[in-house]
Image 1 (cartoon, rainbow, N blue to C red):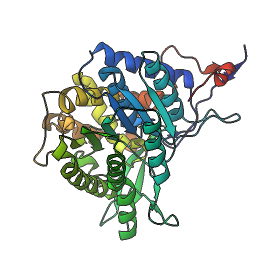
Image 2 (cartoon, helix red, strand yellow):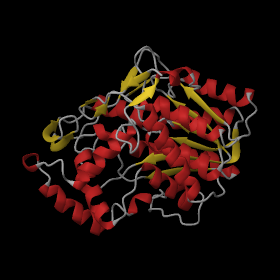
Image 3 (tube, rainbow, N blue to C red):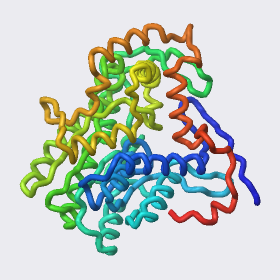
Image 4 (cartoon, rainbow, N blue to C red):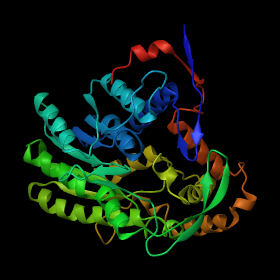
Length: 399
């Protein structure tokens, strides 16, 4: 049997390769984890926008295997071609589909740019053509670097990760070289701020809900949820007070408008302020990985660390469909309360003072946990999985 050797390549904080076998095991383990926790009443037909990775993938796994929902996922990933095995997100969608269909659930993957009007119409056409029951859940979990203006295709908005008002210098993790490096980010220009809001705010979320509602494919009591982030003081200069934070505030304003649209028929537009986790998107935020190292180390010592699936499964079980909603004065769901507890943040801040470029050690428990999670996002370092795969697997893949 011909085998394909799988080589892990990390550039900066980005993984350039994938181990599909490792990703299959992680998907299967995640599905089993959710089912072992018990099924519960929730969505029956869900649209996951951004379901290929991160919180979107976690949402799809928990609604499919915890709630028994049929899922249609939109992701924008690179498929295998030639000697390239594509991206981890592409394989994630393949393996969720396989696992869901094995249990009699409908699972559809659409590989397209969710920002495009044509993609919205493609999804609507498919829902209608295949006689889906109305959607009772729409998850919006898009994290993308650019978006084409839907009113003018010649204009492309590009998001930036920058502070606002003044430069910020921080130590950030370089995973490829296992070191901390100092980095100074200049403040964003007004044009960069506006572009980031267009890409990462709630404009496209609103367009999706408006299009789905106009097409008659939303259930009267449909819930829609977008994931936001508040974060601690340690990450505020880059995130909460920066361009990403500005975009999140815009998304929260979108939720208020959508709530007025959906509430009359029993629907809901929800914002969930989620915790800090290891995802492809979060690892490129300057300074964020260093904070995560300290947080994970504190959580490991206390026995309370959550990955994205753990966090989202708790969110849906307890807050979205459960009886334990925890909301703030703005009506946002706050599953991040555990992370932001004063005792946790005091311990994290003490560790951050000790985690410097001068004394960095790959033996730090927090770093080891973060690196393990990062590698597993691409299927590497998964216990029991070798870095090779049968070539014949590529001939049997059904997206």
